[in-house]
Image (cartoon, rainbow, N blue to C red; front, side, top):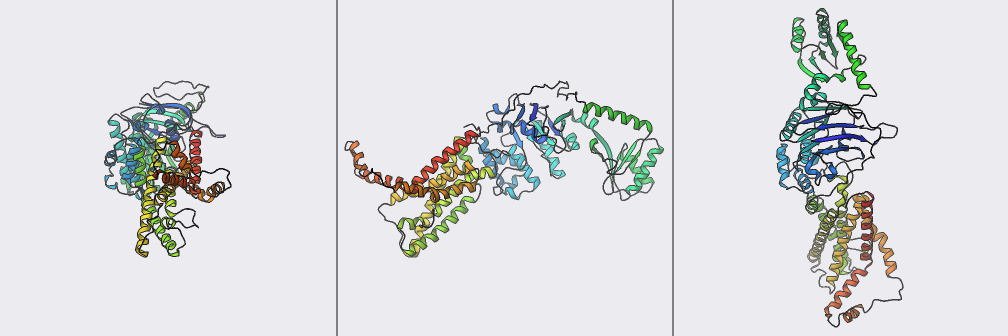
Length: 609
């Protein structure tokens, strides 16, 4: 059972809160509709229930608030807006990535697609889906973890009538299995037809909590919709017959050639049209919201009423209005009892702390492999690297290591390092642009597991990219000039320096994009290392010093009591050369600063580690 108790949003400046002391229930095995006009607070109520924005009140899902549930995604399926995914990602890839985040088997993606009837679209891109198919995919994402409760915000918005019928059948099927379904809508007819219980709100406050039959009986008015090219003539005919028969009939001329006739039925209207020879194109019984009747000054209304009918209807409407607008009246609780509101309110609850993906490494691998960005980046990097390497080798004035890395003196970083930094910047930049982990939050959970997964995957991608670039450069040099720049005595030192540079750039992009919440800022931070930090480090390292580290290998051999192998001297000296490079030192310092900034922003956002 879903129980929402006293939901109240934070008041806006000089405006009342969007949701004010809202209390209702959604029972298992039933479909509940949250009905209200646009701007009445329906979406805000859902966000308060999900603890996505600060406010007062409590929502219990089967007796527990959401922040006390270990895995909320397995308890509540949510549909808020569109599918939160990269438009270039496939439907199946997006759902498999969400499966990893929810900690469920990847096979649930295909099962959910079959349930919503779009299994044939598994290889389609999210950006190419129509409105109806997109809503089906969003429902599949909500059903991935087989949740007990479904919270859907305007699930039928923009859908064709056929898709709406399918949606209502799906919600009925979920409720028949014992689940609780709550969806918002602004269509009273849809709420009465598709829900078992209708909760009506206006200006964020509860107006009525009725079962569907009572709602249709008390809140809706049956009418006859007539479409005819002779609307004015038919309206005059119906009005005269109603006055002659002393019947209360209300005729509203809608836009075009449509009439809405209240207080009669299709048979009577059809017979009147036949008797007077009025052509009718459409004749149907409909049920519409009583509050949406067009005012007399907005459309001509032809009424045929007796004096007693008018007096009785006016008195009943005045009594209902006084009862609803009485300042001392309390909203009825779901059980039917009234209770006064307490003047003392509890402090506002903070936004719920969002947990990271339950399977972070698999999630990150699926996120990276789900788009063509890594392949396109690798292709562009290899092409540019080969071109630069050929130009450098042709000039003959560049060291062999720099030729193989395609790193001229004019460039701050080689193409492979820039590509690694770009892939690292996209690790968090894509999360903030397409927030799949925390939809409609604009935040990403800063778990250590998620950060470690992103660093590990980006490091592997950077090393693979560097190896591809070096191999392509060597092959191109051998093809064009007949020999490649291999065979240098310090090639392992160069390899370690090369790997460290690539991994450092990738990690700098990851951390900077996580701190600044933008892929562009992450790539800018990678470029800032050689442009801004390296000159400062070089000035410090190349300045005068009264101490020297020369002979450190011999001193280490002495500390090892002669057990130091002679080959280790070369290893130690090579490692020191790598660490003493200005670029390496600048990268290490930049990574330390970015890591501290990442942790500080996480603690400042009060996100649980």
